Image 1 (tube, rainbow, N blue to C red):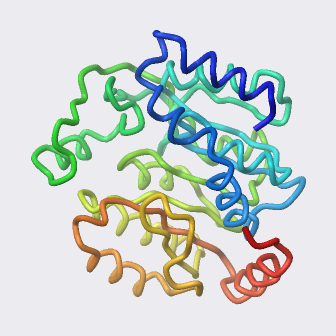
Image 2: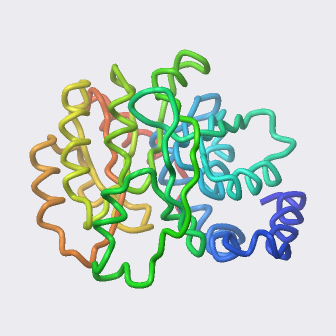
Length: 276
């Protein structure tokens, strides 16, 4: 982080109005080793001058990584408190565009169920909230308010900003709806999965296969390391996700088109990336 960013993060951490985000700010900012691991990981997908979509930005730590790699970022986030933090952190960065919306299957509006105590799991999916009730590891999570937010599609973002080199989708059980708003293949993307909503991941893999994605790997939890370090077909990835124990909780599936070319490019980029 720059000194200016440090100052802005410190101001957010000391602002009582931002208290629901204080834990996220503590976890996701101020750890240079974590930042270095993220940058090394995403360098296989993102290089200087690329366009990246960050769908479900929360407090923007992934924006920071993409920017350190030299990418332009379109960040989509519907939560007012998170948007306030993002505007503060990236106030003077003209390579970051903030979109005040959720992302979904069709333009319009949707109801966002907000978890005030833990905004990182706020969701536009009622099914996700129902799945969390009584599930191990989700005890005490409460979605205590509902707000109406605008919805944009990935296709609309592409029409306005261009085709991204990489797209990160992290929207708490609404990932399949996001992908329903994409009508063609992209070079690479990731989507979050949870073990309380495995059917969502299955629908995502089905949709991505239809769109032409043919290579899949997965990183579990917040660990930025691939499980297989090779691109699997969709059926193998679906079986792997089904077999994961419940305690795995979550992770991100990485998806590419032209998996052989992507494998070669990924290897080449890793060779050029200094060890951390």
